[in-house]
Amino acid sequence: MATLKEILTRRPVAATIRLTVPAGAARPVAPVGPALGQYRLNLMAFCKDFNARTQKYKPETPMAVIITAFKDNTFEFTVRSPSVTWYLKKAAGIESGSSRPGHAVASTLSVRHVYEIAKVKQSDPYCQYMPLESICKSVIGTANSMGIKVVKELE
Image 1 (tube, helix red, strand yellow):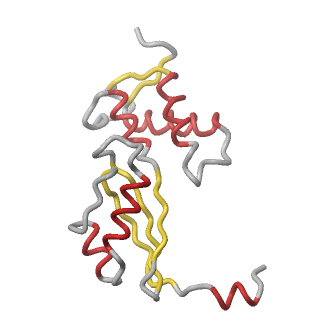
Image 2: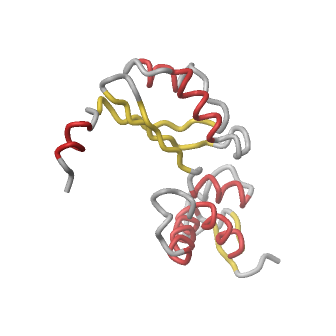
């Protein structure tokens, strides 16, 4: 339960903004500029901070970012690693999944690929307390829904 001091010092939230921005390539133009500008947030501060946080990823990697804009024109944001579907497409070397998952196989991946993707996703804030086995099962389920077959070893 929050104390009275915490309640009084809590800043009122103006909006929660969800964007997908390429790693290291945040600029004060669309989609970042209009989304943050309407809440009078400091665009350059966001761009510099975002680019610094995402410099370890390859350029053009789509990063999901959740920005909390406060009424005093300040903000906080969290950066998530790319989506599982993006990792699966990159690992399989395909542009999109199967149009008929379960019937037509778009590509195959080994269990090792699934394990590597799960290790990366484990660093995400919402997955950090999940067991690696559960994350692997989730990645396999996503692969199946995309028409990507997971095998023990690639031939």
